[in-house]
Amino acid sequence: EVQLVESGGGLVQAGGSLRLSCATSGFTRDDYAIAWFRQAPGKEREGVSCIIPSDSNTWYDDSVKGRFTISSDNAKNTVYLQMSELKPEDTAVYYCAGDLYVTYCSGLLLLGGMDYWGEGTLVTVSS
Image (cartoon, rainbow, N blue to C red):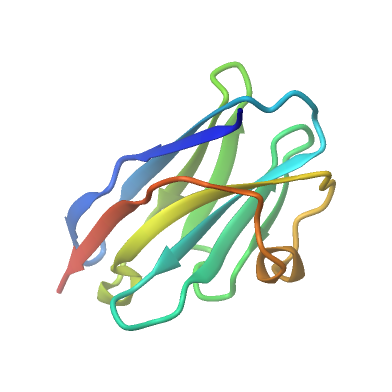
């Protein structure tokens, strides 16, 4: 059974940094993607970033490009989202999600739905 557990959320001032972690378990093949989504109060959930852990192929939404970095530590089965230059508009519940039978990350992948979801972690950026 695939499980995803997020951690690392919290309160940070604008301009600060935060690193989110997504501990994964249960993946038995290499062709899967791990993505980060976020949902701000009153807004729809949106895809933020994606990685193929087996080859480090990545994708970023334009709103975070240059500020967020996704990475994978395959020995620890953990995907990270390093967030820098945080803005109040980055405030949201951040979810990690996994999708099987994927070898390339893209915005279209994140629009198509994911197979597995974590419970989310709250990030609050104060101005």
